[in-house]
Length: 88
Ligand SMILES: [Zn+2]
Image (cartoon, protein in one colour):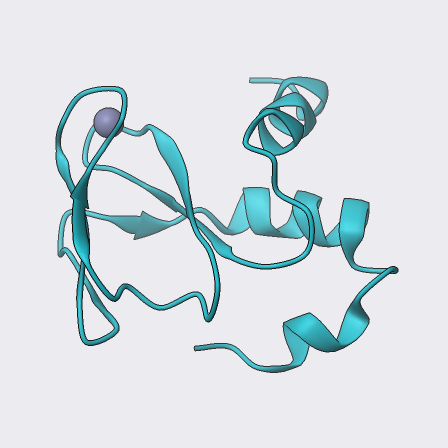
């Protein structure tokens, strides 16, 4: 996947200032907003794999999508630099 495609995904997900990017077990990227912690279990909108979790503990099949976080930070970080100070 090219950088441009990843940037498009970040924008398509509607990411602006808050949230963290993760991948489900099948590699679909999703966003957890607000504090960035996993506060409720859900399902991947693409494949219904379990995503999220409880008490800030992510489902063990999920992985952080740091590449996307970096892109979103580049796109929106300048407007809200303080949002990224705390990593839940
Ligand atoms: Zn999925």
